[in-house]
Image 1 (cartoon, rainbow, N blue to C red):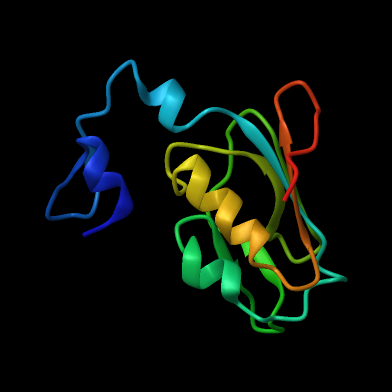
Image 2: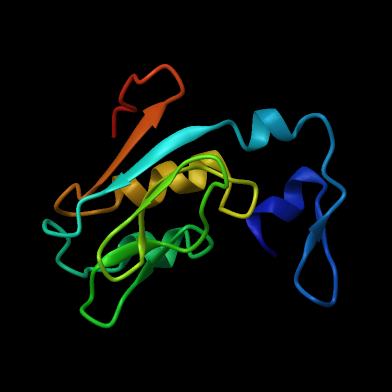
Length: 119
């Protein structure tokens, strides 16, 4: 069972999550995710933990699977390397656990007010 299922969300046959409510702001509060592809060594622990947020490219470097419509930054290859979190990503705690799992700390997370989330 996916982690979000325990929060009352359901999944359709097409894989789309449904049944989100006003509580979504608690489950998916905005935070800024910043990736350092130069530091990334391709361990993929972030991907194993938070596959709806992180992925590895052909060079084994992390990038974001989803992006915010209001704020995101791409590298020269067009991969998203900086974005606000979105409801299409994993839940907040899973995003944090994925970042925390990085052995070289190539993922930084920031609250809306700019405060870095301590990993």
